[in-house]
Amino acid sequence: MRAGVITFPGSNCDRDAAVALAAAGAKVVPLWHADTELPKLDLIVLPGGFAHGDYLRCGAIAARAPVMSEVIRRAAAGVAVLGICNGFQVLAEAGLVPGAVISNAGLKFICRPVDLEVVSTDCAFTAGYGQGQTIRLPIAHHDGNYVCGEDDLRRLEDEDRVAFRYVDNPNGSLAAIAGVLGTGRNVLGLMPHPERAADPKLGGTDGAAMFRALVETLG
Image 1 (cartoon, rainbow, N blue to C red):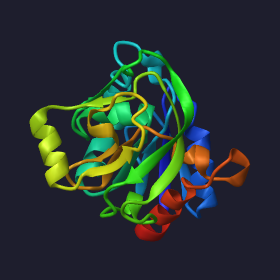
Image 2: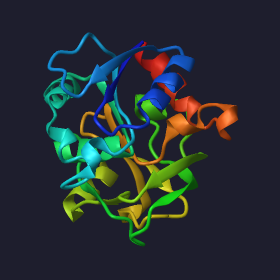
Image 3: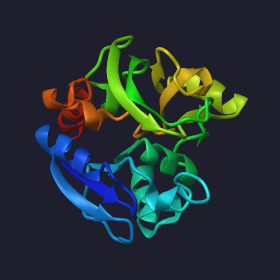
Image 4: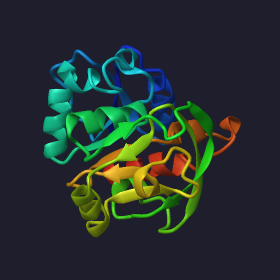
């Protein structure tokens, strides 16, 4: 399985994502925000960080980077796309997932492990978990509060596109949503960091199951 990890100016989890993917058996290809052509890939990862310093809005500038035109095209063609934390914000700004990610309800940066419920297992990203399973992943964000309109929320619920919910909603996200799927189920926006829970030395391995499942499912 070939996975591309995009680096934007200000990304700080690109290497973490690449290491987690490689440990799961993926061949990792580094990508740059200014790229206009991409090689054949089975997965594209938009990592966490502070792309372009989070100016204007988190992810707003990165969503208009040259590479994103190709990401949008590949996503429409069925290629899997995973946006983690800042990557989730970029996906929302690019319209690849519905809604927006705004400042936490408490207006403070939150950095700690949280428990998540696996809601939908009908996608490559969650194939390594059981429906209703509780997993533990770390969060690290000031703007992780997921919001969307009533119609979008109804569609997300009706179409089983809520991938993860917070057990104890730390940031005020609507319906405690921590991860949502795009319309084709091949795009996931996820606020918690699975790459930071992919090795025992990091204090947890619940995130490793996601990367193993992606390699097995997409390879």
